[in-house]
Length: 150
Image (cartoon, rainbow, N blue to C red; front, side):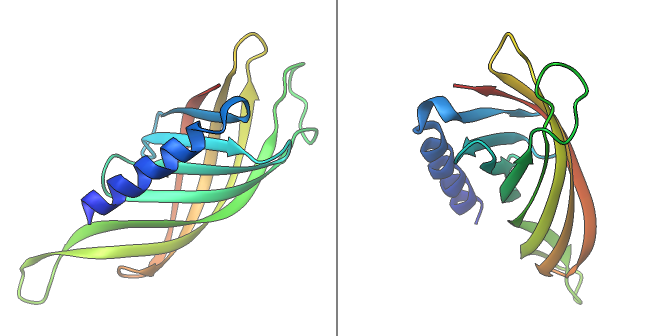
């Protein structure tokens, strides 16, 4: 399963990077690990997060660039929805360790700050998640990160 997730992430990462000027790839500074973002147009994007082995998430985002003006630089608020998949280990009734598949839907709300002198954004986001498979349940996650756009 881990090899499948790594392969899927690699394909998504290469596909995101191949679009050139309107795409961004960076390092997440939280539990999300690596993050990539592909701009489809000026207000819609697809973001992918991989936490180095056990989970992969993909989100469709809507940017609202004029909602919040903190400085002269762009500070868009964004929101969206996506999916997460991964694995976790657990104990069964016989107290044997098992690996279970996780699948969930998640919402995203966040804010970005674009540096005017460099093709870089700094972001913070919240990601409430409802697990459908893998034990079920509701959780809150989030992240803080930086992306370099090329």
